[in-house]
Length: 137
Image 1 (spheres, rainbow, N blue to C red):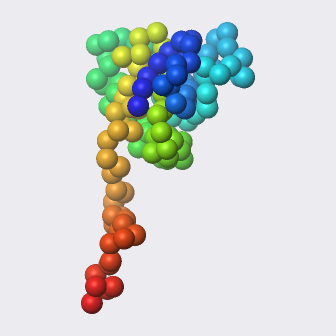
Image 2: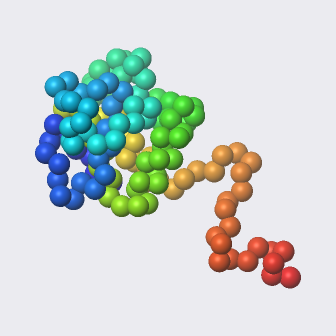
């Protein structure tokens, strides 16, 4: 999982580029190959983005609030799509943010590289090659 600025040239090792900003980057056309697939649903809310204002001393709290927003469910389909892309190959999250190391893309990349958490009451999937207890008897 890589992170890059959307204004950077497409790298040969970028794989699939995914724009993870809520707002379209200034000066870029929709057909620009640097933008890749656009998933605005995984971006922080406008309220959270404004509150954060890219203030380094607020980053830890921003990350916590952003994780909570992602857990709320609105972004679940887009997160699923990102995980699927990640299983298929290299993914580069792109953002217009100048300081990528203090951006939501860093938090999103962390979430995508963490093991998937089960929802309350859900059971882990049984691998297809592993017999279930009923099949073993």
